[in-house]
Image 1 (tube, one colour):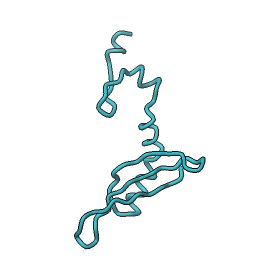
Image 2 (cartoon, one colour):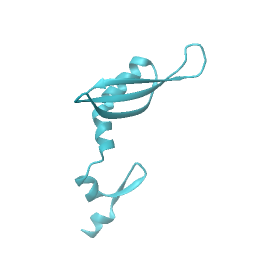
Image 3 (cartoon, rainbow, N blue to C red):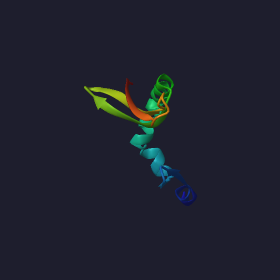
Image 4 (spheres, rainbow, N blue to C red):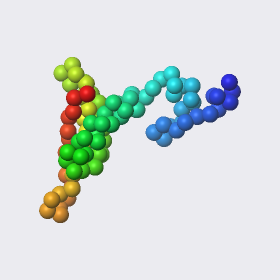
Amino acid sequence: MILRLLLSISTLGAVVPLQAAAETPSPLLVAAADCSQAAADAAAQTGGRVLSVRSRNQDGRMVCVVTVIVPAKDGGRPRRQTVVVPQ
């Protein structure tokens, strides 16, 4: 029991005991798991790289909000593009 409490994992830079991690999942990790395919699709669709992914309630439905960095076509600065995908 003591050994189990001493073992820990690192989640987003914070140390969380294994027992606590199993009982209380992080909402950020759940959102990332639910939106991983949406993020991959948004990156492929725009030709960019994923900057951030989050899920939110929009009009009573859960959606994934994916922010992508898209390279400029004329050699200028890259631009940010936000894609909203229903879950």
